[in-house]
Amino acid sequence: MYFIGIDIGTSSICGVVYHTSTQNVISITKENCATIPSSKSWEKKQDADTIIDIVINMVREFQSQYKEIKGIGITGQMHGIVYTDIQGNAVSPLYTWQDGRGNLNYRENQSYAAYLSDITGCPVATGYGLVTHFYNVQNGLVPTNATKLCTIMDYAVMKLSGKKIPQIDPTNAASLGFFDKKELVFDMKAIQKAGIDITMVPEVAPSASLTGYFHKIPVYTAIGDNQASFLGSVRDIEHSIHITVGTSSQMSIYTDHYMEIDSLDTRPLPGGGYLLVGAALCGGYSFALLRKFFNNTLSLFTGKELSQNDLYTIMTSISYQKDSKNDLVIDTLFDGTRSNPYERGKITNISTSNFTPENLIIGFVKGISQGLYNYFQLLPESLKKNKTILVGSGNGIKKNSLLYEALEDRFNRPMQLSTIQEEAAFGACLCSMREGHYSR
Image (cartoon, rainbow, N blue to C red; front, side, top):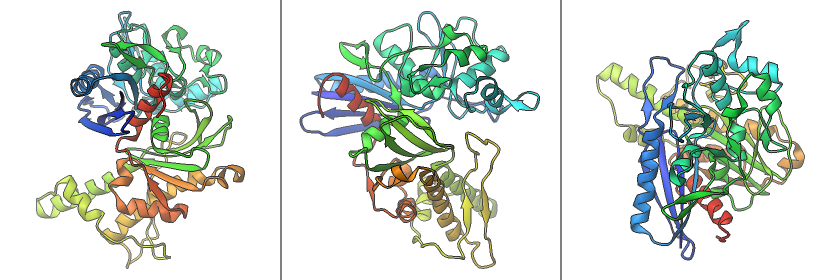
């Protein structure tokens, strides 16, 4: 028998089908071509129904090739929201996790996100769904026929299962903001303090619980992509440090009880326990930014450009160098942080001998690695001492041998790469198996 997992990413949509007997995993990837251009640099939107069309066609493609499909699990980009009407149809674009409206000035030189954090006592940041919603309410942008808001994954589950009202699991609910992570319910007092209509918030349901059927195939509630990637990559959750690098990057470790650590996010994990997560907004994108810089330089001086693949091949072909006093020191906070969106990256320790393209490349991968290691250093010693296994996932690591070496060097541990190509989709697949009472 087979199970399907779908991961709705920012730039691509991935699917896997898993055979429970042979343990074979087949994956397909489609471009997420749903981006809606905007004249506002801070506005990041995608067409929700374009995404759903890709998801449904992907499921149908699997259906045409594999029989005895017993379940569909969904995951994808967290934090963002789409509005739905009473019929369960999208009446707005998807406002993604990258949307910056929460950083705009609201009143008394406070941003929308800072104002909400102050009046509720709950720290929230731009890109969080309920921050986006608050901005939209204040600026008359909520569609008049909107009755609910939900993540794009919840909307996909609705359309696959034929439901009209969204449900959200704790992993995705926590990403919207104003969520009690101990009790695993929305903090209604905080939502009321923010002046948000609580009827707009979706009902919380257990992770990967049955919601309905797509052509007689069970469909389960969606889970967050960070948690899905962890479950799809890590075999020993008690002793592993999970590093994933895509557009953003995360350092995640498991704890069996709720705890709060400054600068780390505490996220519920399906099946129990929590992940402590350090999330960099500009992880793998930092390397893409350097590629773009090299291509722009080439175009300026020669009038020519190289393909993205050719440039990456050149950039990752140089030899990795261990730390030395003559290194460029690069901080890759080019998009700031959740807590300080105006913080920026920097290059220091420039000398007459080290300002070279090769050193820039090495400095960037070391900067990405250092940022993730800094999150690990925030953990209490009682947690750190048991985390002996370094697990890497995501194309930002798998396709960049320099970053792989830099992470091993910085964490001082050999790195095990996930054997699954699409870890988040596979993690969603595993959750659907568990809730369907099938073992891996």
